Length: 330
Picture 1 (tube, rainbow, N blue to C red):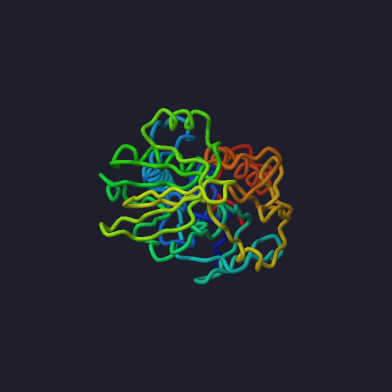
Picture 2 (cartoon, rainbow, N blue to C red):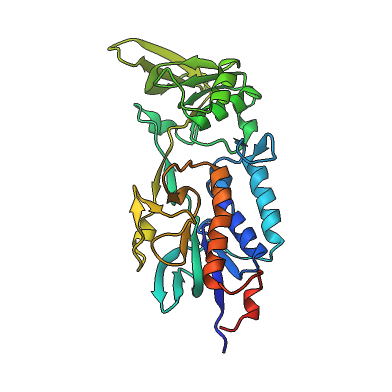
């Protein structure tokens, strides 16, 4: 009986993994996508469906939800094998193939593209007195539905691109928006920082939230201390607060695999073709690192053709034109 062998296995079903599947299909590679979550889209779909994505060429004002919808439509044109709710427990090199063991089955693949982003992720928590009492109530870490903030007074805590994006997005629906940051300078794209400063968002810098308490009308009162002072405090009453301090990522599962991948600060080191130190294992998106790397979606999309074409050149060096893998003898 002929064994079912994939040319390419893509581990991770976020935006970069979805595009890797589509591009693999363009090269007529037999591929599968393995995703641990219950649906495609990764962190963008799970955490930022309302966020405006600015770095996708050819689109203006594209939301995370719209991006994932478009990528899924594109991917489905290639009749992909998509395996959701599936965790890769082990990857092992057996002869010239990779044995991929998941919590559902064992498959074999000639090559692997790792597109897991930063792996499992959880938000950095607000470390303020009583903050845990209000989590998932008045205090949130993601915007799932913009309408939940309509006509509300909202404070966003953070100073990076995502915090700025959230504040500007909320400005369109909220009654009042504050953006509180512990520094005077913001770590965002220059154009977006300028837009922020020209907006109605009230900037509160440099302050750090120290305590949260509920007040009679269902709002919460935030006590913030000015940085580099002993007792200069302000109190702000809001309906909702969004904390955007970044994420703590974890790729512990990958560390259990029966292969050893070179890494730098827990990211996989790759060459100019996105190849790792293991032949025919490639890494794209936020999981890969090289000199000058910029971890944005546009970069990840550009890395995909390099990886797929590198794989196909390795697998089928005598092929001048892409041919479907099922036409080849195994």
